[in-house]
Structures are given as C-alpha cells and as structure tokens.
Length: 434
Image (cartoon, rainbow, N blue to C red; front, top):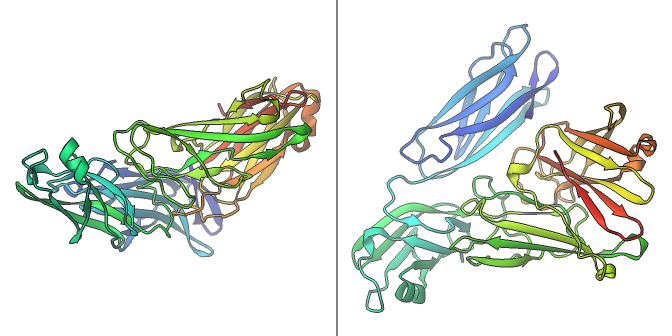
C-alpha cells in the first residue's frame, strides 16, 4: 500500500494501491491503461497532463461528506510510440501538489523486423554489447557470408566479425547516441530490416524502473568488530542467461558475461548495505549469494548467509520477525532498510510470545544519498537504521523471546532482519521476515 495526501478541508493520509499498467508488456499495437485505486468520496475523474513521455495524473477528492471508499479509475493513455514512459499519481495538498505514486513502463515496437536477443538498452556513452536477430536481412552463414552493416539512428555500430562468422550470431557494440529510443537498421546479404528496438539512457539520471531492478545487498562490510572479530563480506552473482549484461553503473561494476559467476565489488564498506541494478531484460534470472564471516575464527565457522533481497520480496505493509531470543550471551541487532533510498520512519512494535504488547518505538531511516519518493534516483545507498534490540526495548530483557512487527509509515519498500551474534564464538544467526 502507498500513502496519498489529499485535501478534505484538512490533510488526510489515504492508502493508494500501486499504479498498475495494462497490459503488462505493451507494444505499439496495444492501447495502454494506467489503473489507479485509492480511497475517496465520490471523486471526479482524474485529470491527465502529458509532458513528453511523462503522464501526470491528478487524483482528486469529491464534494461528498460520506466516508471514503476504495475507488478505481482506468486512465487511458492510448497507443504509444516505442519508448520508456512514466506515470506519476498526484493529489492536491496544502503545499500545492504532492506526488503519490509512480510507475514506469516500456512500449515495444510491434512493427520491428529485427529482435534484440540480449540487453535492449545502454548508456548514451555507447559501448553496450547488443545481440540481434536480423530477420531476412541476413540469408547466409559462414566465412564467405558478407558482414552486415548495422546502424543506430544512422550511426554505424561495430560488428563482432568473429561471432558472426564462427558462431553465426550478430553481435554489435552500440555507438554513442542521444537519450531515448533508437532506430536500428541491419543491411545484409538478404536486404534491409529495422526496428525501434534499442533505448539509450543518460547514466547521470536515476535508473528507470522500466529498465532496472533494485536489488538490496543488506551487508557490505569488511573490518574489525566486537570481541576481536574481523569481518568480511563476499557477494557473488550467477548470470545463467546465454547473453551477458551490464548493470546500471555508479560503482565500478564489471560487464557480466553469459553463464558466468562473478564476485561483486562495491568498494569501501557501507554501513547500510548497497543497491545493485541489473537490467530487467535479464530479471529475475540472475542469482545471488552473500556470505558474511569472521576471518579471525576461520577454523571454527565458515560464515553466515545473508539473503540478497529482490524487488518482489520487499514489503510495503507490515512485516513480522518471529521468535527472537533475548539473552545476555548474545547481541541482538535489528537492521531496517528502505530500498528506494528515502529517509523515512518505521514503527516497531514488540510483543511477548503470548501476544502481550511490550512497547512501541519509531525508528528513523536515513540514507547517505537520499532520494525523493516515487521517482527515479541514482543513489545506491539504501535508507537504513541499525539498533540494539535491548536498547530499543529494555522491556524485552525478562521475556526470553519476543516478536517484532514493523509498519512503514509512508508505504515505502522495506526489508528488515535481526542478527543474533554469540559473544563468545561470534557465530551469527539471521532471523528474516515472515
């Protein structure tokens, strides 16, 4: 659930379900609809303003004084040209207009006579490896087949001659280009084929949700800890696809080759973990592993797996952490994340295992590079808080075990877990949401 601020003579926080784009994978042949669901009293139809490839949808309250009910509006966006689009849900407020929710989507070219087999977008600086299925433009194979010419908006791309002649695969390196959709043309032995099938993005902009997934790596730390411990983090990724890809780049991350397993390196330690942005062309195929271990006790313990969190696992409503031990022999640490890098607030409620309420506390999350909610942002620093459980809830000391319920205040995409660290052995147990 999201939160939308609207005016009913006073400010009222109303839940708004995430914008739904229909169909989920639109083409130029299919009209596009954005579905909005929110609580209102007899509201008028939304007002739609289009600026470039961005649709601003103003959601209003009606004149009725009856209690708000859940209403649904399907906003027709029509048939669209190939490209990336954004939909922003907005509402009146005392400050003018407040952003309430956000969605982004890509419209594919239904008339294209070529297909992109691998990554279908890259930075305006060029250099992206693109695998193409050229259709009828190429009607031969082998060492005697003429090398086709490939153009991106009229600019020649470098063709991988070895891949074409020995493997029969047309792989090119995209030239630099302007932000937006590119017309790709293949001129070969069989004629000419084309399609608006490649997109350029500005690497100085935030990663568009229609292009990149936000993957949370909760722990990225190497260095000394308590009781003589010395910690290190190993994060690996498998790309099982038959094509390589390049992530959105702020950190010095490598090109990820096809069917390869690599170690990810995000540079210096980050207190709140780090975000990684693989392209949606390849999601959800990439697989991740993350191991945190105390190198001072290598002979005793190989480490603890700390789950790398995909977008589909993030929570926008209440989450629970169950059966948390409270014992002086262990350090219990609560870690909370907002994967959109938005400074925010979480309400944490503690309960005894019999359901008795112990206490409630508000925890503030902060990012080293914060973002505004509901819009693309280049920050790879999640908003984060780390608190000692007994310091937050001294009432839990006599209970042995407790349950925590966490409620995001503004509907942010949230993750949390508790680590239980043995003071003697430094062995770590991880308790994740249920």
